[in-house]
Image (cartoon, rainbow over all chains, first blue to last red; front, side):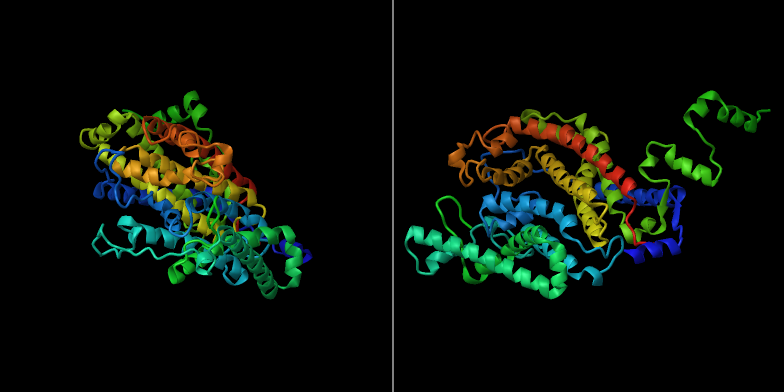
Length: 256
Length: 256
């Protein structure tokens, strides 16, 4: 702190320039360029307009607007209450808390990977992998029945895909309803407790004990909950794609 | 013989001219500052900015371009509003009318749609850039939150507009996108614990969004008003806060 103050006192650099013309000129040129591009694009490519709305004829597949296809893709792995409501809420809250859980003072106002490697990697997993890649899968690789198709493959509406998914408690040999529900709940709790513990160890290992004390319990709790919840998505995808597991927890009210 | 210099002098020194334009145009430091501070549109900017903040390498121009796309959709959207009636009997016919009979109708519709898509992409890239440069770090935490709200509003603007053409694409994409609301815990009739609240198909979260149990005339009107009045108004207010906060908190950049 004292050092920073000294630097700002000793080096008196006025690196400011006039907004007019330097910034306004750039904005003006970019505006012209983008407006020309938008006009050309709009002259060449027409917006889609299909046949009139008919509530009695459901198209197969029915796709949400492309920017929501990541969420629709997640419906394969989670029920709508989670993939469509709870998870988006967590995404929005998670984005909002970023400035408060990231206490790394470095990398404020310039590009750096070295000084905030883990922050950037976490954002990369969340944004580029889980959000953008699922949108690409939903947009280009899903056909009738929400089955997987290559973009160059013909969409066969009669494609048969065997439904072989099994609930994890059933797979474990449990047949009693309440035992299944209890076992599922236990597994979910174990996932959260174990992952939180691993996350704690990992952060201490990477950033040190001193950082953890500075970070505080509240920041750690919020970050680890959001991070572990985010990572539950690839974990569930893995379980589904490799072991054909449908639900981990089955109860009369909700399934996970 | 007409003396152009004399006429110009008469005009520029007239009371009317001076009441509109407060300063001259000579390239002096004073005028450069006045160009910004004396102009309601320009004074979105500070009079001076730090050199690096002007570089496209730093900003990618994405925030400004998101705003440009918003303005473009407002202008083209007003044009479309003159010819469009948000009533199922007319909506689709008005789209056809707009495409085939209105001067520049097709171009305006194309520009409106592509600018809306571009706005979604630009706002994501803007968020990504702000994350990479750590520009959400103190003292700009609050502006990041406003930015997240604007991101959500951008998606909602695009989503509500998706229904208006009233074709198959529109109603089924909105149906799929809104079905999630049925599954809202407690508040959606298919969601967990709905029976404790008493949510049913015509009285739950989705019915609130649709104005009824299914997509119908009420939904079209509701989405139209949300799309053309409510969300743009809220987004404009938040944009004012967003831009003002950038000025107040200063452009982010490496410490001097």
